Image (cartoon, rainbow, N blue to C red):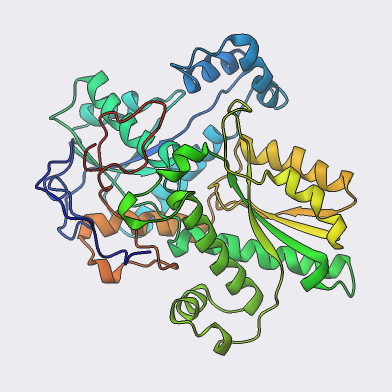
Length: 420
């Protein structure tokens, strides 16, 4: 794997809809930018039974999926009264960001827009224009590199500018993918430590090295899209940057949690190869697993599925499972249904004690980290001063050419990245 500070040769480029500091496409923007506001961008979700099918039509637009098939997914939402938790969580996150910003004396209002439900991104841009904001810095509620978690948001920004007729009037930059920013990672370390302590209290004398397994889980994506996640010149292998990022973060979370050291110390030890010198670790088995696949059976998606992985554990003598939702920023439907319902039920069916650790949500470390990411761009922080707990980062401010292609749809206009 190549050094993250190197890149493939590039020709002079122009990045669509970018601030003057980012328009030429540098990997990291080290020129300060006077942003007017923060754009919090998220997936969106229904807020009542009547919203469910229209919302799912939005999610699957362009794929021609009939309502009868959408109803197969709709029952997840209907079990919660047709209300996805994600909008309420984004309201809480917006308030938390505003409180953190105010506590630091920063004059940056927070606007919120969704991809698939009200309030839509186009509404947020209209509000921004009405309030006189012309330079926005976007924070998407997704930490990793893939089409759906990064490039699609960048395409959404281009679409919203086109729909509102504000292209050329409003610029939108986007903070880097924050999978290995300590503010995002720390809540997972804290949650894993607490879960392991609970298991030890529940099962006196349990052997953590043989009778416990940690499952780091994230959303499965089509294998072809995974392969194209991240820039090709980095050589991440058949599962792309998406899998590589998750595995790197899981490794540092495990080390920090089992060695009982600070996250920064764990990251430094792993990076230097001096992990054995930092202190004793507990060698607890772990693996990266996937969930929530939605494609046809004939289409390869990333595996193993979390439920299949759980089913294999009793034969190895495992008694307890810790599920760490490493790919998720909050307790939305894929966490509350696919993990708290289905995965924990699978644990019970196989006689396993199961625990699911928290997502970052509005954890103070996470909220502080998001604001820090905004200030990186506002202040033009030098690359060497940007925190990252894996050797893969700090990730790019401006996505590289061809990054995170959707095989089915191809390349569409996108902001915050070099074409295509």
